[in-house]
Structure formats: C-alpha cells, structure tokens
Length: 263
Image 1 (cartoon, rainbow, N blue to C red):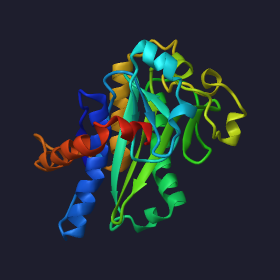
Image 2: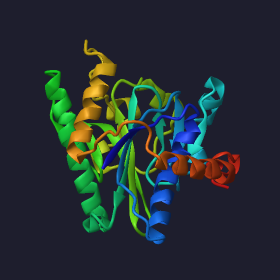
Image 3: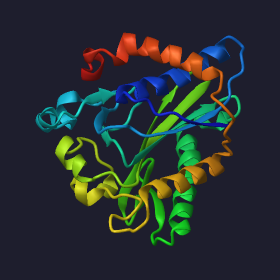
C-alpha cells in the first residue's frame, strides 16, 4: 500500500479527488491493468459541511448559519451522515482491492478490518503522549472515547475496489457541529439522543498541552504502520491520471450546485 498526503486547496476538490481514486483503480482493473492500494491522509483547508450521498439537504444542515458565516455545503459520493470538516479534523481515504482482500465484499468485515486498525492507531497515539482513555468501537463504525464519538466513516463500492474514508477529530472546534448541523434524523442507539456537543469529542483533549500538529503527525504515522503503507520519493506518476479524472468530476458533478443539493 502506498501512502499519499494530498490536500487540495479548494475544499470540494478533495471530494472529487476521493471519487477519482476509486474510478481510476476500477477502470484500470476493468482493462486488465494493475493498480496499487492507497492510503490518503489529508485535511479540509477551511471549514465546510459535507452531506452523505443520500443525506437530505434541508433536514441535516443549518443553512441559515452556514450562509451567514460563509460555510459551504457539499455532497460526497459515499453514504453515511452529514459531517463538518475543517482544520483540526484528519481525513483518511483508503483505496482497497477486492482481489487482494476478497473478504471486504462483506461490509461487516470491511468495517471491522478498517476500524480495528484505526482503533489501534488511535490508542497508540494516546499512549505516545501519555494521555488517558480507552478507544472503543460503537455503533456500526464509530470510534469513541469515554462514550463520545470522535471518528465517523463511510464507503463506496465498485466492482473491483472499495473506497473507505472517514474523519478523525483531533482539535477541530466542536461548536461548529451545533452551529452548522441540525440534529441528525438517524442516530445510533448509543447516542441516547444527546446533542452534538454532548455526543462528540476530540481525540486530543481540549485542555492538553500537546501540539495538535505533533499529535497529528504521530497519528498519521500510526495509521500508516497499521496498513503497512509506505512513502515513495517524489510524486507518483499515477497522480496525474487521478487528477485528470478529478477535473472531469469537477466539471460534471462537484462543480455543479444541483449535485450538492441532490437535485
């Protein structure tokens, strides 16, 4: 597996790049060409709201606050609930091969294999900074600390490949959730109808003296270790192919308001 750190300056281009990754890999497989599994670690450069593929535009977003504060609202190509992303929220995207990992075709296995690795990486990061807490897996694919969620995830499946991606809250201001999101129509049982601030936490405690940048670096390293992901010198040649697909997706989908509104 190859590790890439690729954050686009335009927030919505990050969503297009994720979809381009799986389209690139699946198209190559259909044409009998090899592709390498990828771990992409990135961050939204500015705050934004991201709807799941089937999320309801008017039911999950506080549009009045978003418009007042200039917060854009986008839609991704995977399922799951609406999230807030921005600085302080580590994003990861895993491009996984069904040929190499056939068991992932069973979604419960996919959730288990991905989340167990993230659970170990998160726990190891806390230990590296002598921070207390036990990371648990709750709901379908949430990671929690003291019964509060800090990581949510979603996936997209193609014929030969899966893209599994998600968020890990490190130091992002949690008040953004209450400002930009409505209460979700679908909630896991363990949430027990708690509001956003009572239900969500950051992996790095708010009162910690640890540097969020250093904490993120250690977390990224631990995630890469769990997946055996490695860096290569220079930019991989296939990035140009993915970026070309990203441009197409920006023109046909992510650059269009009707896509994000779901109409």
